Image (cartoon, rainbow, N blue to C red; front, side, top):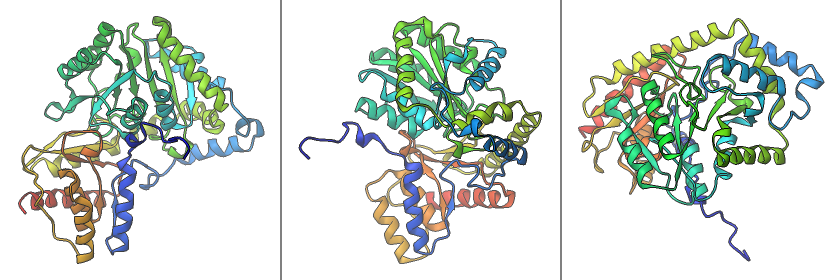
Length: 432
């Protein structure tokens, strides 16, 4: 080309959660029956959308004015008023409809938020990371994503000492990102942890971003929203309706902005995001119209309780399956529908293998693990031997070696078999 057309941060855009699908598809061609444990789509895993939710959507679809036209740039006013009123009833930071901005899913919200952040401003995020956040932040800055450590020896709570040091010695950090409940670990931040993070943000004049897409899926303890602890500090919470209904195909998420008047730079940044959405015109109308009807339906809360109970049962099964396996660190998740296993230091090496069903499968696996991380080596050998496809933690912007699996499998027997198979193959792999 006459000039370089490639964005300087293009190499930072990685998403192993979907990248590993190609490897699974290639193994299927070689005769391996693949069990997809890599992506968090409840619908794809067989979770049934309640009939009354479908009725709400069907009813809206019959009305030309409900969903076939543009919505206002910020989002449907009635929906934003509903969300703001619900949030204000919780106490904490108070918002109006104008403090809410709808996006086409949180992926859109995440990309837009980092795209329009000042190029030299950095947002400190968790390690392990959710790739949509870490890749977008790294691409925005054209530099590796800056992280604080989630501690597997402390139930995946943030290492606040590490966080403080990162903030103190990296003056370009202007924001702190949390994911609560967390993906990929399933941890739920304690109120004490959240208050400590907010205090740090206040001390260094930072803003706080909380990805709360899983806030309605908590089955152990209490999820404290960011709005409850900000106490005047600028912040923003990312929310959506894709996971618990479930309706990921709606691509409907929103950001709630708190305490925008506390800092003029933060207020101007928020206006920039609204201006950017204005150039796009708006976000998809139908799910916005459906949101208040679904959330206010008398069947919604029992639905959430039922979903949480199912995930709690599988979290218990996860803990039971892995608690006796040597060489790993296991924490029972408390929210979302993910769980992560960490290999202890020194137990992995580049000679360990598993029996594979054919020479073709072995050739494929060995080609793709050469020179890679040690946890990727395990994940690929496991995939070749059993078909179970998971995500290595090292691909989630982490120096930890391990893997993430989901709690989404609806069939109890199948889920038990999967857990048992993985646990047995960990032992076999570590002793190979």
